Image (cartoon, rainbow, N blue to C red; front, side, top):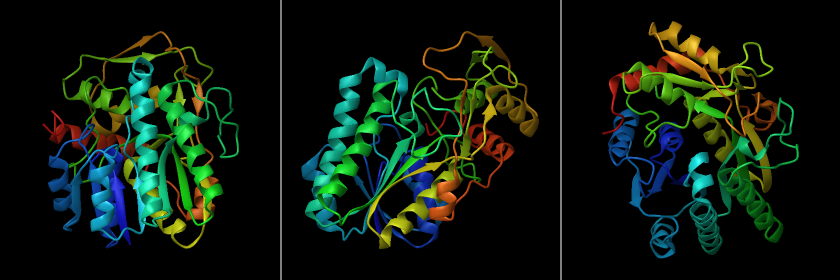
Length: 336
């Protein structure tokens, strides 16, 4: 298949491109490097041993994005591109709504014009809000607590409406839980801008000496050790879920929301302890107050992904901890 991957040099996008190239799909990446680095392109080539096309383009830029469609015969789109920091979205809601939603509308319009009607959309478990009880199933009512999550929920609705207007579309809405880990080569991984928002890159930056200690927000939750429980999934498992999804939508129509998670929860302290054990490194941490908007427990029911896609997460928490540290220890300053 000829697959356009928007945001294909980002953390999840780059790992997905490698898995697609392994299976000899023809890949076209469109990215503006707003949350990634150009050096990732050569690392993808190095790891995969394969070539692919790349366009440095912002998908808000209709004129230049259209050239990608004109110059390539595209069968499907995997749509990762978007701003993704929850805290930043609260501070900059207009930028998030404009960037994430308008760019998707531009993309859908061009897909329609060039008769490309298969899309895998990078959604998020944030669409389940704070009031649903885990394990979370795809049929639960949706709600959000921040503009980032709201953009994901709105785009899901837009893609449902696109299908209602034209039953030729085939779309998978992939709701991710908490991706961590890195490629086993240690050549690509998660390289957040500034202070990490997520647990694992913060742990690895403490381990490599960039940060003094980890702050654990909340130690009085109703969980086995008082710290918040989340569903952590290895980024390579997540990437393989996208491969299965793009193959699944190729010969049918409709819209399916599908959770991609491990289907079990680990607490913050479980992750810290596993990281220390897997890598024989001490992580200094301090227990502090809960963050507003955080819930005690959130993990997936991943049964639908197994049933529809024949996919389930295979890598362990230990794999995630070991691979995260291999990446960070080899690249103490990320891609710089």
